[in-house]
Amino acid sequence: MRTNSRSPLRFAKSPLIARNYPTTSIKGETDDLYSIMEFVENLFPDRAIIVCRRSETPSVYHASANCKKIFGYDAAAVKRLSLPDFLALVHPEDISEVEQCFAFINASEPYDPVLYRFELHYRMKHKKGHYIHVADQKMAMKYGDGYIYINSIKDETSQTKFHDVKMNIYQYVRQEFRQVQTFIPRLSQSDLTPRQKDIVNLIDKGFTNREIAEQLSVSVNTIKNHKSLLFRKVNVKNTIELLNVARSGVW
Image 1 (tube, rainbow, N blue to C red):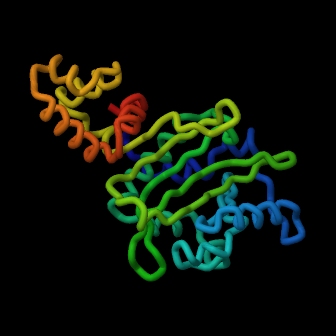
Image 2 (image 1 turned 180 degrees about the horizontal axis):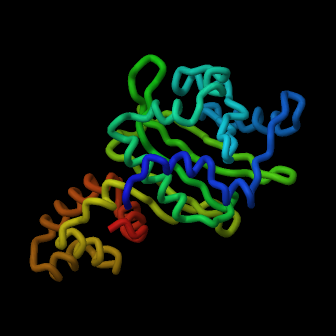
Image 3 (image 1 turned 120 degrees about the vertical axis):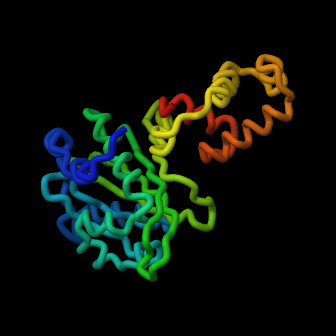
């Protein structure tokens, strides 16, 4: 997928989303929606909650107090950030791939934003100057005659080692959100080797390590080594996650 530096702006300003799924405003602390946001913040104290407008004039309606705890900026400062200001906090080595994630979302339109969630993993600059690994989940909620668009940002630095920018895509199916796809920009540009693809295809067919070794006329240890390399290359922890990525169509 080709990178386009305007893609994040197109995501925030999407005329299709703005027209068919208009943003609901939070008018003040007396608004019922404000109370809902307070409830969400209390429910997820480890996440910064930012409510945004997706329109021709993207802006922040509401930012939770724990933004300061997550990336150092208090709620008032976050509300003053423009979209370019926010993107400037993304690590320079990650911004191109973050843009590709936004372009991927744009290419998926039209879709009902309530039925999908997009969780981006990238590095963001803390106010103190260091970078943290964040999981930035973008979601929407129906409210009244419109929608509210929420960014839920969590600091993953101490829990997960950062390898690559990636985006997990969740769809609401049978009363729950299920991960249906993973988009990894780096892998969309760098294919696996033919042997690695063979191994992934055989894993997908349900073959065991021994059966794969027999199919490819190599030792079981060789297959185990290949799988370990695949896990590191694709940035996954197990076979299930590897297959989720393989089935997402990034190769």
